[in-house]
Structure formats: C-alpha cells, structure tokens
Length: 196
Image 1 (tube, one colour):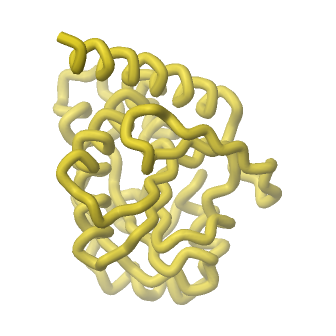
Image 2 (cartoon, rainbow, N blue to C red; image 1 turned 90 degrees about the vertical axis):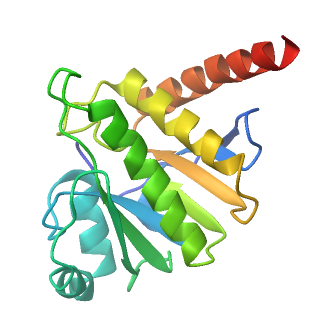
Image 3 (cartoon, rainbow, N blue to C red; image 1 turned 180 degrees about the vertical axis):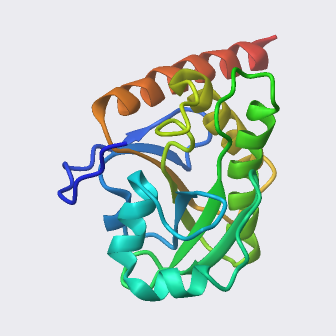
C-alpha cells in the first residue's frame, strides 16, 4: 500500500446505518480522534503501508512501547499511547493474510474490528478511526473486507452507546468509493429487513 506523507483533503460521508459511522478519504495519521487503529503485523514493530506511516508519525517511543508488548495474534488488538500523533491512542490489530477464504479469514477480520472497538470502550474513548484492514499487502478482497468492516461495526454499535464516532479512513479513491457503495447496499438490506 502506497502511503505518502501528504494527505488529500478529507471527504466525509455519513452512512444511514448507525449515524455514528462515517467514511472519509484522507490520511489517518492526521486525525484528531481518541484513537486510530493500526493495521499492524504480529510483531507490532512497524512495517509498510499504514503501519509504517503511523510509526513514523508517532515517533520512536511508539516502537519502544510496542517492543514491550510481546506481539499480537491475528484478530486480537493492543493499545498504546499515540505519542506525537494527534490521536491520543493507537489501537494495534493484526489482520489476516488472504489465503483464498478457506482459513477463517472472515472471522479473523471481523475479530479485528470487534476487539478494537471493545478496547476503545474499555478505555472510555469516544471516537475511533479505522483504516481498511488487510486489503493492502495482505490481499484481502476489498469489497468483502469492506462489508465485514461495516457490518461488524454496525452490529457492535447496536449494543453500545458510549462510542460517539467511528470513522473509516480510506487513503485512496478506489477504497473510498467501495466503502460508499457497500455502505449504501448494507443500508438497503437493513431497511428491507426492518420493513419485513
């Protein structure tokens, strides 16, 4: 995933599922929220794409802290301070590598979102921003991953009232448009189910 330092303008898009969910295009490292989510690898020691960008923006103390955490299994999440980021915290989660869909990838990806949201609630955070987890170097199909991200988050928010904003930050226009399109489809499905 290409993640240059310069951020395009953020473009918000509220979706008619839970009104606390937003979709934006931009640079997640520049958001002023309680926590941003890092699509990390299992070592938590930095890497490419959004992981590398978050580590660069947060500064060297983030890496030093992550080195004390002992890594993180796929689907789980860990929390650290944000250090030099505008966000107060970073929630690190390890998405699954796509291996054809027969190795629990869907379940593990949903767990990334659910466990990150749970950590945010446990730490009494009000706002959290996610990147598109596993859709870069880990090759998870974008449309499938987007549906899992939005549905898992919407389901979580249905039973939680403390979170005020959940933002999906899409770095490129292809991801942004995919999130918008899948959000509209899910909204239609939700409306149809309510009418039945």
